[in-house]
Length: 448
Ligand code: S3P
Image (cartoon, rainbow, N blue to C red; front, side, top):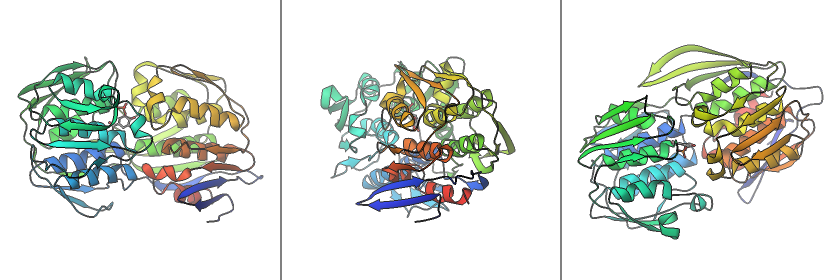
């Protein structure tokens, strides 16, 4: 594929993305429709599968991660129509009615699929399940969900005492608990709440800071009794619940919009309009961070769609300033830190990111990988145990870099390459299709 600036070369299912801005400079223009929110897509498929009746999903993300969720729940008896963005229909099997699969359930690259599904499987009495994932997922910690599930009475086995997939689960009737989670993680919270759906009484999760609340919103919409206490960062589900199929409209993913927000903010002369972006306050840390950095971003046409706030975002270039990202802001922008690191290389001053040790157990060690790959391009980034120190205002130069098969690393490096002089080659760039299959197409469109 060839447009002069963006080229792709595929060999043996691995793609190298080549980005070479013209020496005369580049500015980005256009209107962008981003794909559906990954977190909401997973939950719509899962709750649709567990509910009675029909769930229709508009705007589903067609990336590899939600496809893993759809395939696992199809194996357990949910009837899911062909996946497309217009309208997917899920015929639910009813809470507690999942069929015991005869094959291993494969969550692929998706931590959300595996961790949320564990809560569902562990609470299905009299069935046995085995679950696994790809080379990255089998290295990611599962004890964070296995431990609270075991407190509820779950029976789960795996490597290192159930810390790593592959895992085997003997479903049980679980008892409700109040779990004080040591980490602010929506995957942990959602796993425990989903496990609590069939437990009799109140299952509560309290977190050190508020994580994304899509599960709470959607469980309520499907008819479960859910209480939230924003003061103590607690969410409670009262079981046993019944779930009724619903129409779901999935907004665009703010985590995908983040790449264009930063691209528009750091490339001189740019202006981009990103349509239909979910702006749930538990997800908009990226907007707060870019505001601190004095980016020029406007929220237009703000509205509510199927229980989630949505807006169009307009970004124009401006000189960014360094900032410090820490504390309760971190869970609200955890997936956007790789692209914020790119923004920080263009900012005046030194940006500090701390309290983000969770990045080390994402699809890759995102602290190590972003520091190493951006430094190859001339950035000045030092790793901190729980974050990064980024000296801004460094000129980036094209280099050979690698995604480490992490989707957000692949896309962040592509945006960094737009700002670099010379050619950047991003290895294993196909990883982007985990959450953003049309990323390269859109990149080509706005670079014209
Ligand atoms: C997600 C929660 C976050 C996030 C992930 C999606 C979710 O993970 O990083 O991409 O959909 O619940 P943690 O719960 O591990 O923070």
